[in-house]
Image (cartoon, rainbow, N blue to C red):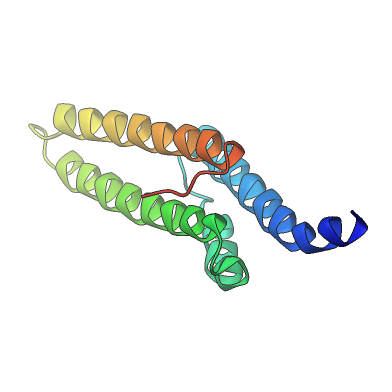
Length: 119
């Protein structure tokens, strides 16, 4: 039984790290609209290979894709904001992007806790 605990320890460690990275991305989303998500993003890139061949690997990819798509949509909102007529559209894009990222964080945490890989 002790041998099983030793074998599962790296997977549990990778899972714990992914969980904390979800929390860091969420804290950044809530506190700074995602401006500081680059910090957990860097950790996702650095630690992703440590989770290779496990379901946790897909969670790093999920978080990385979530960050980059969120950045694309926030940038699009910023471009729209430059025009008087685009300001309402910018706020709509920003709101939808924020809700989309929140959904992805919640889905990721739930699936991580259920030991499910992300698409």
